[in-house]
Image (cartoon, rainbow, N blue to C red; front, side):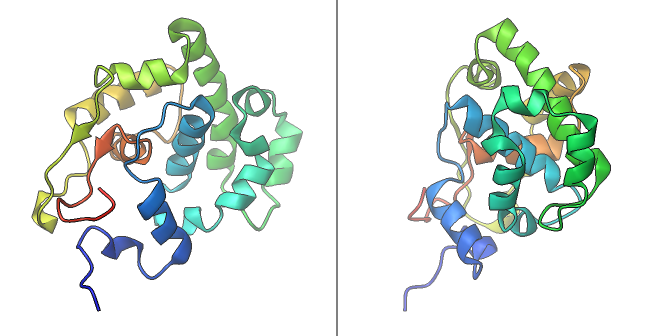
Length: 186
């Protein structure tokens, strides 16, 4: 039996998390809908493990119109209050309402930059940051870029976008590649 890279151990043995690691995590995306989805899902993970969120992902996609930015921006208070009753979601009012709040801010970003993609990737000048992770001690959870992006997200009125969550978000859309150097999914 092949020994697993340290990179993949955080995803095992959960099949959804393992699939996410192998096919999405640190893979470059320029799709606004997907970028918004990952921003929302990372925000929902505050105080929880991402394993919890990835296992609720299908329910989030269903409840939040597959993360259609325009539809999420138009959600009413009454709709969001109904989502607080949905046992398949994290029933935290601030987190549920943050999806609309962030969608509204993202619409303004799109007006300013042409796309959410153009905005977020401007922080790395369109290039992926590839870290050379060899051991657990090499892993970081925040960077100067994630701190700067977090501050701007907050200035724009977004929620659940602290520097650590923003760094995880950067990994989720491939702005950062933090696979271990020996990871076959790098």
